[in-house]
Image (tube, rainbow, N blue to C red; front, side, top):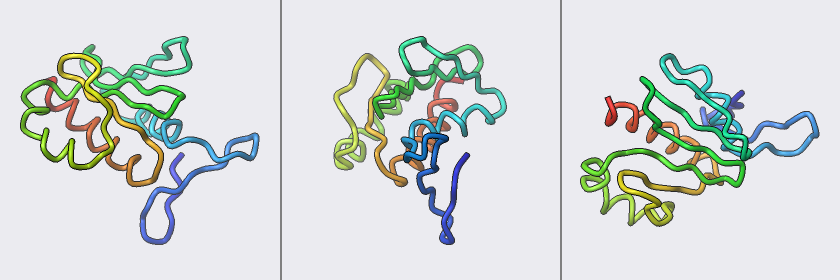
Length: 121
């Protein structure tokens, strides 16, 4: 359920309660439609996305996404990841966490989930 403006940029959608839904909610809706990706509710208000049975992303209702990019990918991208200012401390080996607050964050999240899938196959 992604709303695109005339420039093709994702914008917030309105939920049934007429509030702006967080971009993580939109990402979850989008990822549910990706072939080969399974989205499982965690019971803690978030979801785990798996590809081939391997967890590749954890998305929380708090607007934080954790991505299983793997250590080699993180090492290759570390300079860019750090320079972006979007990423939180590495939660565990091979994972990075980021806040998803804007349309640009949303688009980056989807690209990085795709990268995480490729890195874990």
